[in-house]
Image (cartoon, rainbow, N blue to C red; front, side, top):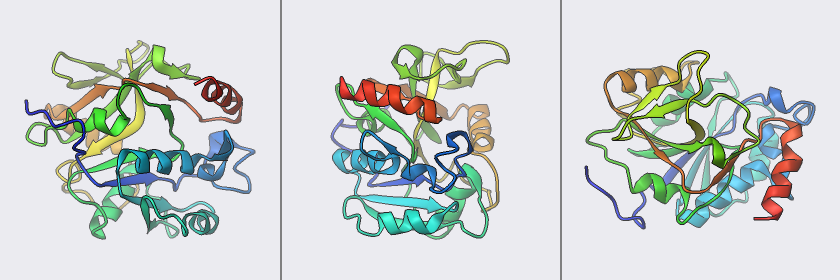
Length: 245
């Protein structure tokens, strides 16, 4: 399998998922979108965009829906990465539909990074996007997920998401069982993953299931530490961990 230089990113563009209702973060999201909730002194989406800029990803496509005006107003001055808005005010399309809409409008190259707007992480020996880019092989992969073992997932109390075989191919956790790897919300996506889909409301899981069935869904373990920041209760432990590096 071909290996990419760690300094050669697979894409210059990332889609940042920022349209959701943020229900788990209530009451903090009653009057602001979840990406604007502040953690360690700055909005969640700024943590994400700052990491993209540091890694050398120059363009971000941010989808908006819930309280979109305030999020757009916050992003308008952003210089690095440059931000393009994918407007979902008319209908919240979920993760799959959101990617299809942005692709159909010519906003996403092939491939592109995709990540959640509420991600916080500390990089390991190299940054998250280099971890993904060094493993990306478009001849074999429709999507490459960044996953993390339970020991590197702060605030996470679930059963995990995926198993990996020796080549990094992904299978899902069985019901009532524990899986060793958790999806960080960060991935590389090819246009092949999005084929034959319409910009309507659906989850990326639908596309992943097809890719997994074709042996084209892969994952790479993250070398850093990832923080689950899904509820108000997770903010203070995250800030404490970040403070101590």
